[in-house]
Amino acid sequence: MSLLSDLINLNLSDTTEKVIAEYIWIGGSGMDLRSKARTLPGPVSDPSKLPKWNYDGSSTGQAPGEDSEVIVYPQAIFRDPFRRGNNILVMCDTYTPSGEPIPTNKRHDAAKIFSHPDVAAEEPWYGIEQEYTLLQKDVQWPLGWPVGGFPGPQGPYYCGVGAEKAFGREIVDAHYKACLYAGINISGINGEVMPGQWEFQVGPAVGISAGDEVWVARFILERITEIAGVVLSFDPKPIKGDWNGAGAHTNYSTKSMREDGGYEVIKTAIDKLGKRHKQHIAAYGEGNERRLTGRHETADINTFKWGVANRGASVRVGRDTEKAGKGYFEDRRPASNMDPYVVTSMIADTTILWKP
Image (cartoon, rainbow, N blue to C red; front, side, top):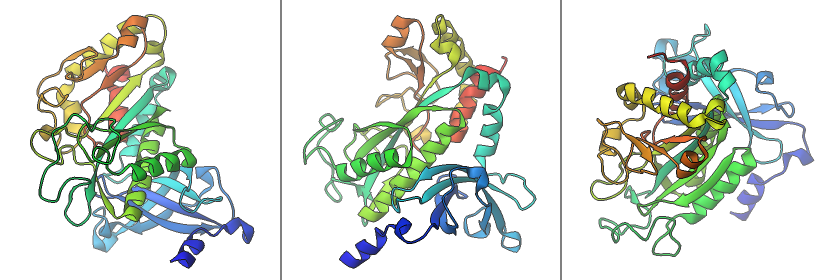
């Protein structure tokens, strides 16, 4: 095994200019990440200089067998923390051979919203809090939980330290460093309220880059859990009962919100979000009704309410924002399995472009 490890860690730049590019895209379920690698003649830093590629869409639920080719367009480049050196990860989106975005390509529509002059002028910032659960591979039960049984009640696990409170920290720390290496603006990690559940935060990220960075951070986490023999779950309520669910709280601000007088802009934006509550909920993740019950730090899925420092609200405004009269707010409704392209662009569309 030591030889295998040595080979995996070979530094290609010692012997060749060639680099490996891992092309990443989203499969037919909207949550299944797929990837394959190709060799490039030399280092590349501009995605527009990378070749388009194709894959068998009939094997990912995205095309019929008789016309199965789907084309991937490179959109963003990150350093590869697994192969290191000049090797790269490439976030792609998906098109038909004629150049039409396929139905599961949510990035294309998001990019149109973010390129709108009114949205671009507002420089929308996002900070996404991605919660997830680590499961024991063979039993699909949270890491650290007794098989077929339950740990003690919630309370000691949130940001907890110790062998009986924190489960999977090596995976979490490996992911943290790997994301920083890759060039993702990961801003922190913490243990969550349910044991075996963790969170990482991406941001601040501007516009479409927020979606790119969250998706690649998810890919890196999938790869690390694969190596560790642990299953990664983005289910918004992995365990029924008196346990917290998993969300993807989305912090948001525009240039107008960050400037003097921004608190009034924030209140207007929140009012608009309330008017489109049903549309947002429909796009905020599958199974979210199991999480948004009005308990466990959530607002009921059928009710929109906001408040300052209220973690039981749909939208929370921080005390610092209220005091400063400007800043950002947090949309607490998105589920852990939400598509960040959809959520970030929808918030921008509702708060900037939509005229009630």
